[in-house]
Length: 233
Image (cartoon, rainbow, N blue to C red; front, side, top):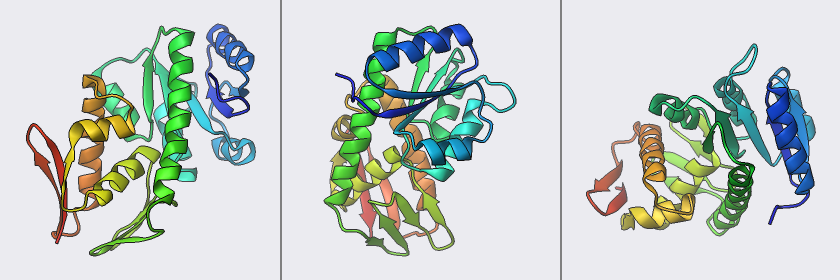
């Protein structure tokens, strides 16, 4: 069932595809704001306040990856779904590293897009509830993690986290100095433990390890065949 009334910002320059997607989403009760390019993306996100963004990768003037980075700088919690014919592994990894939370290859079915939209919206809402059960501030040696604000304060900078980055760090914190099963992490963050999502998790873990690299007393240990252990000494 669609989450009626939720606002979707949709950037797509192919008129025929855009019309199919827009009509289907509106029929399902979504509030859709469609643009052919990413000009003034900051104003768009600020004024429309979308609950989710759908971005084509190949766009005139500015590509979807760059747009995702701009959106992430404005709202690090924003779910972003990429729609693209670029299917190489490097393209997919680039999409996630730029702030995307899902990646759907063209051609795609509208049924699959609808399921992915609902999953992203529900997961971002569930993550907010999970984060609110944690303290407002978690001190990790030289770092401070703010779950509700999706922010990690390092010794030298403040990092705006994506919703999935914040989810993963939340789970690591709730299992501090204890093993965290990889399957549980995948189920909690992605909803299933498929091979594709497992690869995504590897990308996110590399990024999160880099965030904590300035403190030798913080380590994310890979437990081969099991999961991870977030060690803070």
